[in-house]
Image (cartoon, rainbow, N blue to C red; front, side, top):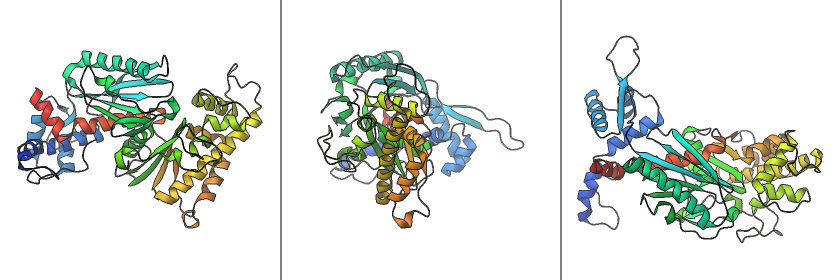
Length: 420
């Protein structure tokens, strides 16, 4: 991810000497370019005149910098629609031969990937199911996908941004309970292309997408929670996740909000994970633990909503029993959210994945448990709890956002120019 803020070219970074100054000076020239590209991404269809106002640039400076970016195949310009009198201006968009990011969303059962140019729009979307659960098989298949994209697009492809349902520390998986994985190295994904590999937790990346351009856009502090197999999430401040030491923060599913008699696959007892997904629904229905908790939960919640399909394996489960189980699980989810609101005081809470359907299946139970769990002074004006705007696509859009942060950093833009 890009740094939180650039240093001045004359400032020595901690632990560096004056020998690094030429490199810092070289990349510092790209600061305004990075700002321009960020605006183009954040405001699709922005005109050059609007860009100049947003960045406090003179007309001459805006013309000069956009011409430079056009020559470097970073921007294209087309005439803006006429708006009465005044100087004609242009609409800015990514160059058709500009940099690309490959975003990959690795999930418990399958994977999806798509390419994104500098405007953040995803195209060439592809997907596939895992042939097995072993890390080598899953990552080998994804490595072929990455290699294929690299062969098709060559040097235009600048980074691979991967979302994983796992705890990530320093860019590697240390535990993926839902997949049954322990520590996993990910170098095989980009071994052939040698592209930069950016790795993030899926719930964290979904939170980034919601905070920047989704349901929490404009909020200074947002809490995002995603339920699939267990619950993950992120606290997003100023559009960036608070990830803690090594990037392992946001493991909300492993807070002790659950039954201390239950041992979680992560190794801890009483994890909230075990109270809010398909495993919890099966337990409350007296059924064995499902092999695929995500699919099981979707089937139970579809039954509650009257959308069950014949042969879904739940034909002998009364709708009333499914509704009671969903109510208990929705209450556990809401109570935990209230605890996190008490701790973090976000402006807004967004829900993704199964959390949306759990709340819909037992909205009264959810609302009561949320209110009961809040400190009394918060109940008059509680943070709203909103459905995620990106739905099941949140992690993929978040991976794009983080990938483009990297691709449009000062150092990456300097490298792009050097390669032309």
